[in-house]
Length: 161
Ligand code: PNS
Image 1 (cartoon, rainbow, N blue to C red):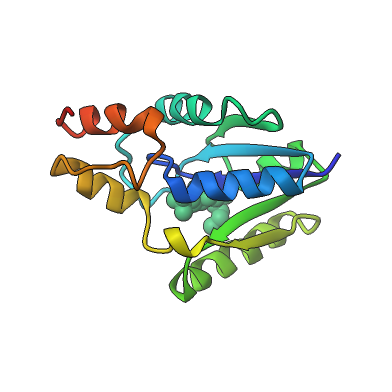
Image 2: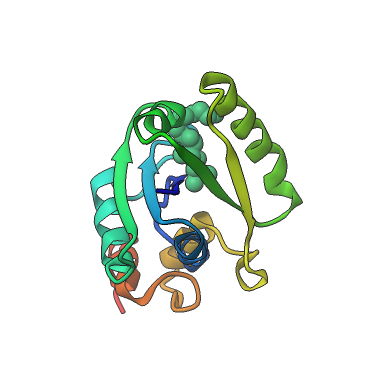
């Protein structure tokens, strides 16, 4: 079975993430969305909350499962071998950090490859940070996050529709 691991902090999941998940799910037999700790970010949602939000959004994608792991990505991947990492690339500015992470992961686990999917042009501007900033001002999030989680993101930011 061809398995892809799509890791990220997903704080919260955006329409850009969902686009990558859908496309990976049409290429691979199974996609594991892995909600992880990014040590340089200060999250709005707990890991468990993020898992719950993503589960709600991907419930109709039969070959997608959502997990969380607080260790190294390379270790998580080892538990699911053979699997590849899938990442989305929005712009050249993403490339340097993503290239470095792919190389570090391969250094830790030489069998582990990273495949990059180019973000849909519609979503190149989009990030979880932009979503959180917009939510703080009570903006319309319908073009940024899946509709199933809009209320949760606004509520967490102290706003309601
Ligand atoms: O969505 P993000 O915040 O860009 O995702 C980054 C993430 C969570 C995939 C990355 O920080 C990560 O892999 N964290 C797990 C710890 C790890 O394996 N670090 C080594 C790679 S530098």
